[in-house]
Amino acid sequence: MQSQTSSRKIGDVILDLRNISLSFGGVRALTDISFDIREHEIRAIIGPNGAGKSSMLNVINGVYRPQQGEIIYRGEHRRDMNTYAAAKSGIARTFQNIALFRGMSVLDNIMTGRNLKMRSNFLLQALYIGPAQREEIEHRVKVEEVIDFLEIQHIRKTPVGRLPYGLQKRVELGRALAAEPQILLLDEPMAGMNVEEKQDMCRFILDVNDQFGTTIVLIEHDMGVVMDISDRVVVLDYGKKIGDGTPDEVRNNQEVINAYLGVAH
Image (cartoon, rainbow, N blue to C red):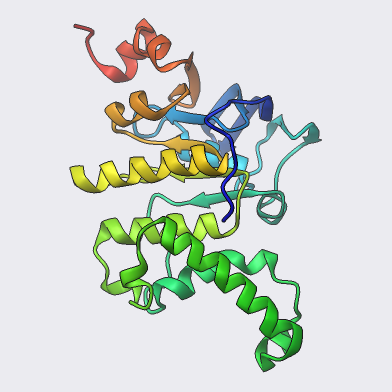
């Protein structure tokens, strides 16, 4: 992974979500939600349980197709975004529940993040000859860079099923980073972590954003984390947007205080 000189310089809008509405039968998960995401920023999505946060991430990376609204990604208007197109266009994702191959090593799990960048056909890969062999060597170099960046060299050959929870979350981040995403969607990356593990994850998120210029969209319930590392925050409640702005603006928004943050002191 080659470092970029972003220095947390926030750019133009890279992703624009306009009037997104999503329903499952008679249940409305999202109602007329609009917000944008700027290049190189850390954009947090917060709200109570059931507010629609994960549904919004699923709309962004094509898991769900909204019944109404429009997605504009890098100036291209899309009625929806399918998962393959999202991945090919540089959107990567981690999940609320860890989705790793538990019997495979850390290195092999992170290698799966390079799949869309592999050009050799299945037969050449199976025979491991010629271009396929050279290509895998190139991909392994990238993966080793990710491993070094996340400081997990000592567990690179360990099956992930043997790792503690915090390290498994770091491996999942590594798999997403191996795809060299332009936008990285993180669904509660610190859920279930202790204080030390949260501090490590915060450091890696900030380093990914700063050193590689990766745009990050983050769902997180720890308000201390959100307010410390986010550039802008959008707040959802029962599938509707009730706040949007800088951490200070959201912190002082009375509707947000009433719905989520509790009584102001």
